Structure formats: structure tokens, C-alpha cells
Image (cartoon, rainbow over the protein chains, first blue to last red):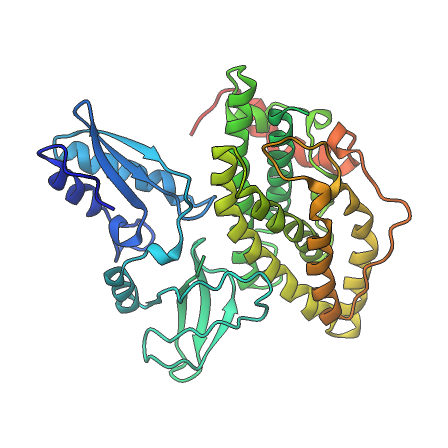
Length: 165
Length: 241
């Protein structure tokens, strides 16, 4: 993911950009979420490649702005480049990111199950509170574009599931 | 048909349906659906934005995505008639969503191999979102079609009302950068038939398919929708927020 070391501040700039939290899921940062794709220096300007999670995700602009601001605050000249292809997938959320989501109370995405005919929630999702797989889907959609709503029938807690795309 | 024209048709389909779906916000029959509707609308409007930006760039007249969405009249819109149909009841809305997503999912799947980089980028995101819409709308079509007497009757009404608008999905002149619409029909029929079989519904044969949207001939509903959607931008031209 990290571009080749071509600038003395490459590592510093990367860590500054990477530490920006997701505004809607603040427990994980943009590197762990897998949306910070690369960072390179072009004529002394730190250019960060950022991929949106969902087509209409309203957080995209906020995230891009936050990364740019973080780089500016650290003393860099900065620019953001939106990278559309290849598209983001939940498979890019790092292991650390998944663990942080679980601790935060959001069930991390399972292995890709994008089947269009997987009707009535055939995916098994483990409860982030008690670990039970006795869970049921309440809604394919949740509080943000990236989440679905589930309920654990073992501990009776409702929870968000980071939906798999 | 130019690439810009074909992209504009796609963009209009997505914006018009996205706006229709957003009209449910605050009115859905339950909280979960009140979250689901704006989420689906966001997917559609997000896709529309990228497509408008690209259409404007291809046309090269210095227009913005906002100009494309807010400053064109009803006869300049090139969306298919299905997406502009008024929401009706929940059964109508869910069936309309299924009909559209069952077309777009295989369409974007085919577009993943496009020679055009922007098309590939949009397709990569949208194909997954449309699969999700098929699942969500499909579940409701089954739940209502195979539900109570009342829900089954309403879903059957929706099928009778909307089936005549589906043929238009497969119409269009091919451009090399985008998939051939006619070739999507078998995939669409397979998805819809699979869901209809579980729902106890039948896809009627369409004797008089309704078309005209691609040449700007729309139903009465679109004008009303645009009047509301464009009112702020037209009252305050060039406003930004």
C-alpha cells in the first residue's frame, strides 16, 4: 500500500494522513479502513489517494478534507486525489481495523458474500458483545451507508454490522 | 448516440429514481425502512453525481453536475419511464426498485470490462450496491407477494401497473464503451423470475409496452418531481452550500 520511499518525509506524511479517523466510525482510521490508498510527493506536494467506500457516502468529502487538513497542519503542502478504480471492498479493512470495530460494538464484515440472490440474510454474523452466532438481521440498512442492523438472540443486544461489499 | 448522451441517460435514471426513493424519507412504514430508503437513494444519487460530472466533461461546455441536474427541463431529461413512476404504495416502490436493480446489476457487471476508465470505476462500486438493492427489494417483493391477502393483492397491482415500463430498460443504441442494453434481458428475466416464483407472482406478457423517456417524452409525474427538486437551485442560481 505504501508508495516507494522517494521523499525524506514520505513515512512521516503517510503516518499523518493514516492517523485521520473515519468521521462516522471514529474508532478506526483511514489506513485501517483501507481507503487511504497511497501517498506520494509530486513537486514537493504530498498527494494522497483516497477511495470512497460507497457511491453516495456523505463522509467522503469530510474525510478528504480531514486528511488534507492533517497534512497541512503537519507543515506539508497537500492535495487529495479521488481514486475510483479499483473499487473499495470491505476485504481491505485490516485485521487491526476489524478488531477495533468489534471492540467498538460493530460486527466487522465477514468474507465477501455479495450474492445478489442471498435473500433473507444467509450470512452468519457473530455478536460483537457476546460472540454468539445466534443473530438475526433487522434491516439490510443501518445508521450509515456502510452498516446493516442485527440483533443477538443470545444476549438480546442489537448491534451494527459493517456490511460486506 | 454519443458516449456523453448515453452517460446522461444513465445519470438521469439514477437521479430520478434516487429522488423518488428519497421522497419516502420520514414516511416509510417502519424505522428500518426509513433508514433503508435514504440509504438506497444515496447510492443512486452518488452514482448519478459521478455520471453527470463525466457527461459534462465529455460535452465540454463548462457545465457542472448541478447545472446538469437542476437546469434541464422535463423534455431534456432522458431517463426511462420506469424510474419516474410515482412511488404509489410500498409494494409499488419495492417492485420498481427490483425491476431497476435487476437490470443495473448485470449491466454494471458487463461494464466492468469497458474500455472506458470512468465507466469501469463507476461500475465497480455500483455493481455491489445494485446486488444489495436486489436483495432488499427482492425480500420485500417475496414477503408481500407471499404474505396476507391484502399484501398479495397490492403486490399484484404493482406488477400490473409497472410491468409495461420494463421493456424500455432494454432499448437504446449501443456505444462501444457501454454494455448492449438488449443483451441484459436474459439476466434480468432470470433474476425477476427467481424472485417472482418465491413470491407466487407471475410476470405478465406486455402487449403495449410504454416507451419514450429516452427521447424526452415523459409522464406527467416527472414535471411535478423536477419542479420540486429544482426549486431551490432555480430560485437562487449558482447558490452553493
